Image (tube, rainbow, N blue to C red; front, side, top):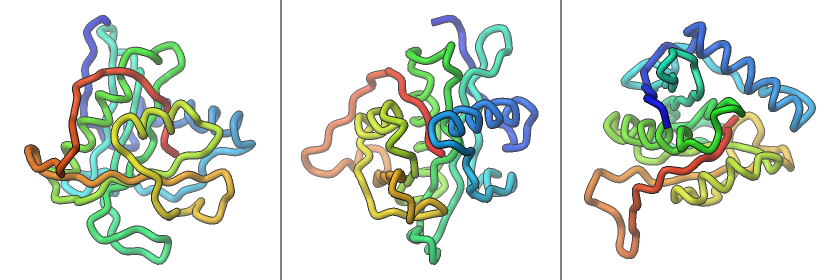
Length: 183
């Protein structure tokens, strides 16, 4: 893979907006409409969130992802949650491990910010995303958020533990592969 850089940017950075527009088109193709979850750019400002973009050596944005702090809500979030949002890799860059690299950086950031669980919502029409999250240790969890009553919705969670505190029987590997999107 050619040189690639992952950088923190504001959620409303022009390149982030461009990739968000592309993922919305993909959601519309898969589900008939884009994602209607309300998101404020300030939610992705450290230390209560983070938004990342991956660029190739030429400065072309290839992938994106972010997390935002969520505490107990009527929509089903728990105290200490970090909600993964807008994980997306442009189709021409899939298969390079970008999603895994961004996911790992987001998990580390959320852990460092004191978040205790990473959660995400995706849909059953995104099997590559589901496969990525399961391969990274995410497990199905009770539904939460805007789409919690939708049949196509799938929610996953992963505990965020400090380095070296994996539970008994848990193993971690450094495999770098690829997946797709979290709404």
